[in-house]
Image (cartoon, rainbow, N blue to C red; front, top):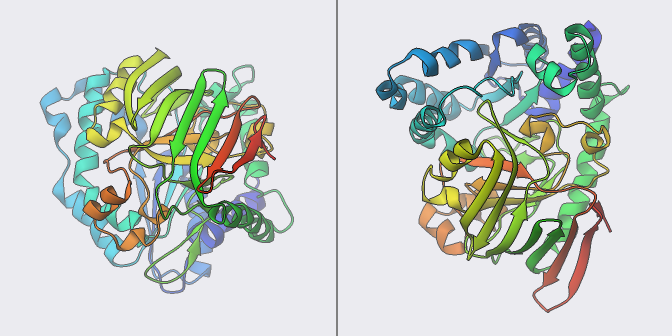
Length: 408
């Protein structure tokens, strides 16, 4: 990887992604294969005034060994010290960068019940940390680098080296790191997304209608809904940060009990190393009452059975087919990229910031307002060039938002 381009990419992570402030600690969670990028991030972070940069490395293959060799009864154990560590660095105001180098098929041969047990235990243990994040108290970022396995999945026709190079080329283009001034390019992009957000927030939408092959869905929005896009403001230091790079979406929460009809996926979902593909849902009064999946049925079933809220939706997001990710004509088998290719929904937890004054409301108040609550939040893609989206306003007007997958 070209050192100059790697540093450009690292600058996007630090200055746009978490918008690191002088004196702020930085935690970098990363796989061991991403050490070059972590070092580039570390250099930029210290140049920006970081008080300390702490790298937390993990090994996906070691994680898999737990599922294949550990006694199943131990999979529900999550160490309290680890949960407290996460809560403490959040309380200290640390920014958090999570570097992804995915292996989409890593857990394909692991029993779904084992994954479900561990995922539930982890989600429950780190819920206090997630509450800090959901209330806007942590500047965080998800950003990806190639792995040999990911490159092979996206470019099966290429050699390992050529596949990694091709994936890097796509990543740098999609994230604007290949431009002369990536920071300015991101400022311009966020401004465009904010324009969409302002338009949607001014529409006074009662409900949305999604229509496509296999999809006929009515999605009611709660009173006081808030569309967001681009980034968020940290409630502790007022710094504007962009939590996903890339990001092409504008999103809000659906009313927990206001989703009715059918919804079909248009792209595979890689969930904890297992691919779920060609799946669909039927909703009644917000709840998933039926579902199908051609691949990964048991894994999807385990996800939906996580808790009561995992049978409901927490996010609705609009992404046009002009997205550079969609235009790449590639399925990336990674949610960070695929969710920014097309319109999508999320199973599980709603973001409190997507309803008026939500970050100051209790869980009970959020539920009363129509927000969904769960320990999971999993995005899945439903968009493409055959999707139409309409908004019906509170005064009864019908406004076309998207036609054939693009903004009207």
